[in-house]
Amino acid sequence: MKLFSERFDVTTLGFGEAVDGAAAHYEITVPTGTRRRMRAYIEAVLLRLHLYRLMYWTDPLVRATRRALRGRYPERILANDIYTVPLALRLAPAESIHTDLHEYYPGLHDDSAQWRRLRQPYLTWLVERYGARPVSASTVGAEIADAYRRHGIKAQVVANAPAYLPYSPENVSAPIRLVHAGAALPTRRIETMMRAVAESSADVELSVLLTPNNPAYVAELEQLARSLGPRVRMLPPVDHHDLLPTLNRYDVGIHVLPATVTNQALALPNKFFDFVQARLGIIVGPTPGMARLVEEHGLGAVTPGFEASDIRTVLDAIDAEAVQRWKKAAHAAAAKLSAESQLPVWAEAIDGLSAAPR
Image 1 (tube, rainbow, N blue to C red):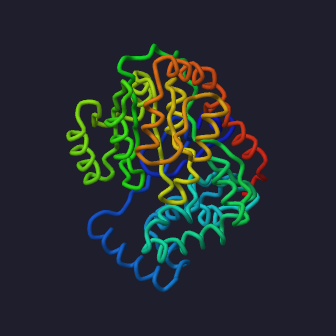
Image 2 (cartoon, rainbow, N blue to C red):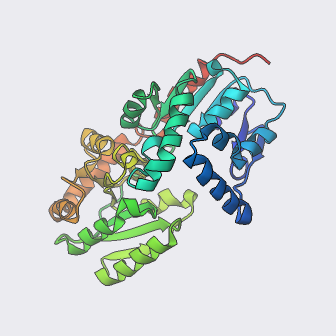
């Protein structure tokens, strides 16, 4: 927000309250209860009939957004993700729109046969019908940008990195303290990292902090942690503004993300950059985007695969001296891998848009 609020009169629309710097804000809410169940039934019918245009324009969030913005004619639009692009094109010409695509939508959940049959064609329709129309686009990693190029979208890369923080790398603990923090998604197979730590011969321990978006999976992991012994702990999640100070108390961030879905195979997630700003060493799997940055900056180690034995191979070889080198490398790379180094791409893109006529 700070990037634009000093030069533009910024109106925001989305979930939750306004952020500092917004001249105006419209909050929209997700339907709940009976309305949500009815919408799920309607969507199931529309998807099966391939009535994608009707599916989109009858979406309660789309309708709420149109009502909120009735009578407003923005000069420039930053459309957040593919779902907002058709709306943006109703409000302004393509030459006045920049779209930011955080995920590769046709590959979000393609491990599910039902999702591939119903949702994937709809999301592919959104991407191919609307995604290439805005004059400017960005996404969070080179691999996702390459995937979107096949749909005619030429996206620049703006990594999902936090602001630079003036932390210093702390001394390595004994045992070496590993941490994984993020969403509780079964496709991430977090249990694999937990088992690898429990089975490792190295003097390491792991703390896992997960958001409760899948309570059943969290409960399953909590039971597993108890069975694995004291070296693996499940801890309560922390608020977003407390996350980086919490991570800074650890030594190594670990995120071995199996390619169970296409979107994970292409991922360059925000937690990778959180680890850098927290001045941690980093252990990742052979996911191309993360592995490339680990090796380029000497931030840590890349496992040969995604199985527990692959992770254990790396863990068994680490020691305090190696981890201290990784933490110092994160310190050296923190400025380059921060939001401040990424946001000029957005600034140039928005400045390059044509102001829509009022």
